[in-house]
Image (tube, rainbow, N blue to C red; front, side, top):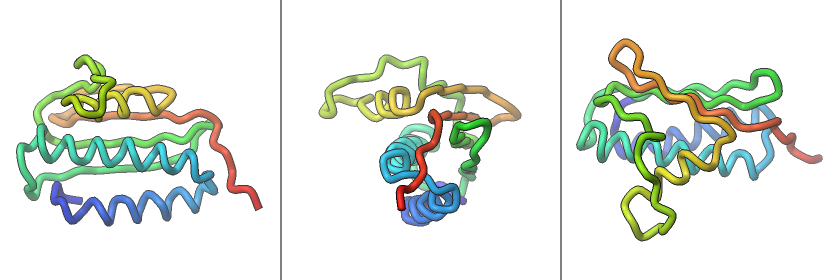
Length: 129
């Protein structure tokens, strides 16, 4: 997808569909949506500086009892773990707190000119019938 504000709706729809295919419960899906929205909006605002046709890539997989969200963009290097996250939602950087605290693990790499962020969420809960 491209870094356009109108793409966010498509991203959320894709995430909801993918989560249903993996039979994730609503709590985990909400965590995934919050983190993905923050990553996407931070890429537009701070990474690329504006909406543009630059790429953003996402994948969602289940591996070894964990859900893994991989997020990639070609913005300047930025490791979300490197900045102090603000706890107050009114302060700049509050989104970084969500990005860093909601997943169980966060890994960052700069690879081939891309920011590659891998988020792992613990043992996925299944939808209860």
